[in-house]
Structure formats: C-alpha cells, structure tokens
Length: 318
Ligand code: PSU
Ligand code: MN
Image 1 (cartoon, rainbow, N blue to C red):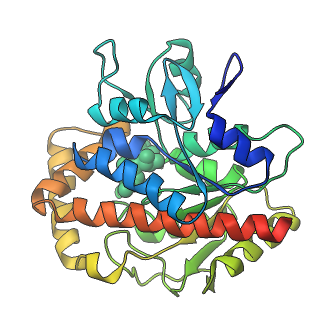
Image 2 (cartoon, rainbow, N blue to C red):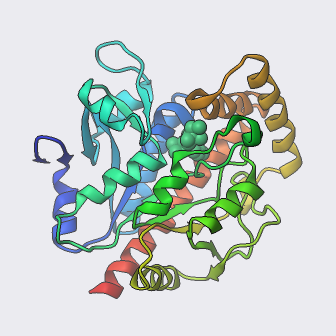
Image 3 (cartoon, protein in one colour):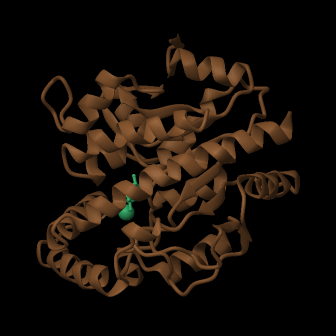
C-alpha cells in the first residue's frame, strides 16, 4: 500500500501505473447505494474480475475512515456492500461538494462517478500523463423536473474537468435524457458510441438521441480520446456501451416504473442526494428485480470494455 497523509493507493495499482500497465478505476457508490445486497457485493467482485480477465488491474475507489483509497481490498468492499461503517453509522454518499468534509470527519464514504473520477487522477505521480479509464453503469445528469428543482448531478461537472475515459451505458434513464445529452454537448464532452449510433438509455440500448461519433473497437476509442486531449480537451471522453441484448429491458416497462417511482418521490418529498438511490431501489421493486439484473450486466460488461480500452490506450501512448 502506497500511503501519504491524504491518499492510499493499493500496491498492485501503484505498480501497474509505474510500469505503464492498464488500470480501470471503479466507483463505490453503486455498491453502497445503487444495488441491493447481496447482489451489490457479487457485482463489485465480478466487475473487478472482468477487468482482470482482460489483463488490466481493477481499482475500486472509496473513502475508508476518511482516507481516499484507490484499490479497496476485499474486506473494505464487503463493508461498502453492507452499507454500514464499522462504527455503526450509515455509509455516506460522497460527491464533489462533500468530499473534503467526509475526509475531515474520517467517514467511510461511497464515492459517486464525480468524486471517484476526481480521486482516480491522484493515482498518478504529478508529472505522469498516463491516460486513465473509469467504468460505471450510468452517469448522473439532469434530473426530470430540473427546470424547477435545479437538480443536476455533479457528475457532469466532473466529466467537464477530469481527463479520463469514462465508460458507461449512457446516463441513468430516470433522468431527463435529452437535457442531459444537451448538457454534455455544452460542456464539450465527446459522447462516443461503442458500436452504436445512439446514446444508450442505460436499461435499454437506444434513446433516440445521437452520439457524436461511433467507434467499433477499443483502439478507435483510445485514438479518439487521445486526439481530444491533444487538442486541449481538459475533460472526460465518454464511451457509451449499450446493455448486452439479452439483458435489455423494454423502454416502456422501465418508463412505467420510473414514472411511478418519481411520483412517489414527489409525494414523499425525497430530493437532492437521496433521490437517485430512492428511484433506483423503487424501480428494482417495481420491476421485480429485473432492473437489478440488467444493472449488474451493464456494470460487468462496461468493466470489461473499459479494460480493453485501457490496454489500447497504453499500447498507443507507449
Ligand atoms: N448509475 C447507476 N447506479 C448508481 C449511480 C449511477 O446505475 O448508483 C450513482 C452513481 O454513483 C452516480 C450517482 O455518480 O448515482 C449520481 O447521483 P446524483 O444524481 O445524486 O449526482
Ligand atoms: Mn442531485
């Protein structure tokens, strides 16, 4: 374990980076707050395994006793999956605005797309430009009703400012996808379709919205990302991988569950940070677990594609 006063990097991760081998970073919020127990634990392990299968090193990121940790060990992942810190308190959802506070409080923090990506960049030495890859299910974005609530995920801010490849199945379909898509364009994030022309809708393969560019191989994705950064791009490149066919859920079915969950959230006055976890868990119940099965497949498939892109990036920059 490579540690400083404010960061811990697991040995295999530090070594891979020093030797220029591919690494895939993964978030912990989806483990603690995105999937039900015990599928969350099994999925977290399966994602790491998928990364290893493709010859890359997985690095799941979270806050352990306030310490940003790049490469959680299996005991730590078990704690995140249980949702409860060793002192008995609930594991907090940590994004950009509460990261520093969670560190000072020495909290166990489940990091979102935004905070995970930010911490991921700290895995490298100051002078190291090694390209990094991050993999998740669906990014956060502009919530439905944002016109009144102003609820837009800090994931968008992180995507605009964090230079790595973000592999995902588009944005979570509980969001306002057209507005999220517009926002990605505004902030200059290339939205790349992995063997698709459409911006995926997370549980479903298509949304009717277009991507900026379609790649067919990890190598093409790597070249697009490097070209974006060479032209001064300072943010992420989003590589959108549609859910594998056999796990796709019909968009009407998900939409029905989503509208019902959103209605309930409104009646219960659930908003802000609590909204996304609430919607995901209600949709899980309303679809009798089908959404979870699909979410799991998306996460594992994305981790595997991310590992191949990481390998292609390393081969290209070498
Ligand atoms: N996508 C999923 N499951 C999740 C999330 C996204 O399939 O649990 C989580 C991610 O951690 C993402 C967060 O960063 O939701 C966004 O939350 P918010 O909308 O509150 O920013
Ligand atoms: Mn929000």
